[in-house]
Each structure stands twice: as structure tokens, then as C-alpha cells.
Image (tube, rainbow, N blue to C red):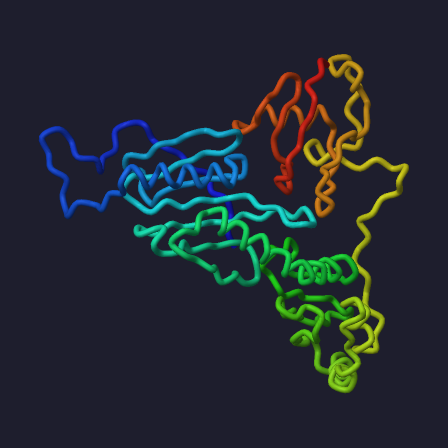
Length: 330
């Protein structure tokens, strides 16, 4: 699973750099012409610098860093750059696309990595550019929407015990059936509405009826039904519902930073004294609630936070969704 890395560039003396009067040991590293970097920068400009999450080489030798919005462009003049871009799909899911450029790029295509169940086959020519990679990846995300909708249905309607925090690439779910019995499902990402592979876990005596029903009723699986409805039909069994985490509309949620429903009553908080949570992450898969005061203080402690006039811009502490909170005097 691809995760954005925290990159740094040491501006001090590197022990592996040749010192005055010393020759660098070993064969010289291949160097790219300056035109290569000019071309790469121009292609990143086409995609949008605001979508750049990070960039790096494999070494810290002769590294350069350019801060752009919340992002860092970091590369080694000797080694293969790796470009990471943030891409959103049509349902607002945020994806990190990692693109590695080979030494003979663009004559040879780049390689890509992302948190998806399977990667697209890139269509590439010598005239192709980074924006073409991003465009093809976005088309691939459209193909995967039915798969992720199916996985969302499983997560919301069934009692999933593993994984507790599924990544986008994870196609398996272990579902609790009660009495220490479970069914391990593996959904086909290319045919998410089809009958999944399954394995039953638990005591044989308790599972015998479920296994028999699965074998007998598997032909009743319908692509027109929701996943959890199909599973209940095939097993001929009332599936346990997931633990309820919903709250009443008139009941405020706990803050995801201070873990309290209301702020303390304190004169230093001014008009915010004793207030309930008043900010909610706009990512529907997160929807974490915060006190704007807590979120503001948290953003101030993060080095990548930006400020424009009286507004702080950053990312949700839980899902990295973009957040913005107004600076107010306490």
C-alpha cells in the first residue's frame, strides 16, 4: 500500500560526498541533462503543482527542495525521480499516485504504484507526458467505482472484524456470523457484483448448516442485489448488524482532538467557552467532528499548514481531507 513519505534534505556536510582533494570512489553515476528536469517541471505544471504530494530520488546527494503550497519537490540529480500526485475520484476518495521515471524517460514509460486492487496498463508513446499517466489513472478509478461501492456496502451493512481500517486495495473482509463463527470473503475487483470467494472459520458443528446453504443457494446470487442482501439470501441466515456508531441528530459528537463533547467553561476561550463541536470533516467516509478551536491549535502545530489572511488551511488529522478554519480571538 502506497503511503506518502515525509521527506527531508540535509543541507549540512554529507559523509558520502567527496571532500576537497579527494576523488569519488567507484564509477561515476549517470547524470541527466538539464533539459530533462526542465521537461519534468513543465509536465508537473501541466498536471498542477497543487496536486504534487512529494518527489524524491533514492539518495540525498545534491538534492534540491522547492516548497509549493503544502508540497515538497525533492530529487537527486543522479538518480531516478519519483513523483507522487494526489488524485481524487468522482466520489471524493483521495488517491496517491506514485510515478517513477526511468533513466531513459520519456523513451521508456514510467512505472506507477497506487493503493488500488490492480493497476491499469499504461498506453505510452514517446510523445506521452505525465498528464497522460494521470488521465489514464483517473479513467481506471472510474472503472473501480462499482468495486468500492460494493466494499462500502459491506463495511456499512455487515459486521466486519478484519481489516478494521481497510485500504482501498484490500479486497477481503472477515465477517462475524455469531457464536465465534466467521466468513472470509474475497471480492473480485473486476467483477464486484459476482459471487465472491469465501472461506468459513469457526467450529465445524456450527458452520455445517451455513456451508450447506452456501453450496445449495450460490446460484441465487444476483448482480442486481446489494452485496449484503445476496449474502443473507445465499446463507439463508440473518446476518448480524455492525455495532451502531450513529448518534442522534440533537446529540453533539466528541471532538476528534480533545475527545470531549464540550469545551471547558473558561474565560480564556471567550465566546467558545463551553461550546460543542462545530466543525465536521467533509469527507463522508470520515465525518469526524472537531471543536474549531482544537482544530485551529492542531493546524498551527503542523509545519505544512498554510495561512491566507485569517484562515488556516491544512488536512484532517484522520483522513487527510482538506480542512480550513478561521482564526478567531479567544
